[in-house]
Length: 331
Ligand SMILES: Cc1cc2nc3c(=O)[nH]c(=O)nc-3n(C[C@H](O)[C@H](O)[C@H](O)COP(=O)(O)OP(=O)(O)OC[C@H]3O[C@@H](n4cnc5c(N)ncnc54)[C@H](O)[C@@H]3O)c2cc1C
Image (tube, rainbow, N blue to C red; front, side, top):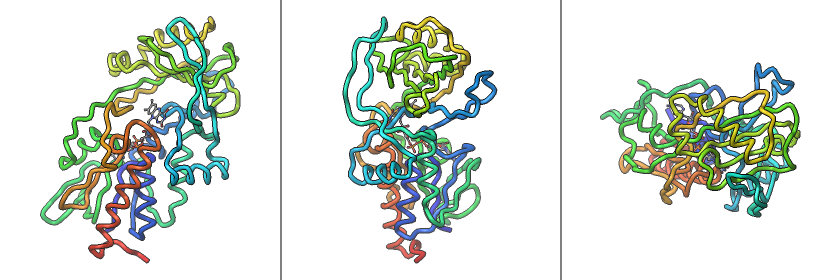
């Protein structure tokens, strides 16, 4: 027995770290093959290009750091080479092309892909029982306590978008936060055909909202772009995401002013990419049972830092209850 963290994104990693810091025995279960969640990095395979084996970020594009504790974590990861400052400004475009450059906060990227950040965080939690390819099918509240797939647990932290959590656990809050989808389109070119850039915010375009230069982001200058399809168009193509490729590639060519077609293109569908609204509570916790929900929707919005803050907030709250009730401390 102990606490079970369901979801191996950055919220789950932060939650598990907070439980561990409080001395609570914890396990983390991730349904995917790797940790990271929406901090997702795909390894290119069978592309017919020379970039097989290269990693591409197909979820979150980057992250920012403002909270002092998160800054400390990012600095520690940067000192280990896992994270690096990427850009503090991006190009801005309209439907017909690039119009200028906008400044902003420092955006951080990861040479090994953003999922490596979560993997490093989880790897640093001593004593944590971690399993991937481990779908949690049912979390139930019974008169005997919390049951997860027929096994009793002291506490459960659901660290994922609310709609995903509700599929598994009926006791989740029925929050009305709407989520928008994004289809990410990865384009591998033969060489760089575009001007030097890190990323492009595309405004007022019905097809794409953003283009990331993954070669710049990862620091190897590979001619790889990742475009995000507009949420309205993404929603229309969720059942057949590959069908958006022709329009998305044409938009990339139009915005960047380039003619060549990529040598390889593929898509990734995010049905729950970004919460359109967010609570500020940090997390949700059941009044009577040690069952909670965390994620970016509970701490300000669709940002890596928000998800980290939310996961930590839930981990601390659960640890406080478990230690107070004598279930927690293992030291
Ligand atoms: C296309 C896109 C672009 C983005 N761009 C940015 C950006 O530029 N900057 C930024 O800061 N943020 C960005 N974000 C948002 C950022 O990725 C998220 O805020 C953050 O990663 C959310 O982390 P999380 O841990 O809350 O959720 P997730 O990363 O979604 O993790 C939830 C995990 O739970 C797992 N899971 C679900 N159900 C189960 C189950 N039943 N059993 C076991 N495991 C389960 C999932 O597989 C997943 O790994 C972007 C997101 C997307 C999709």
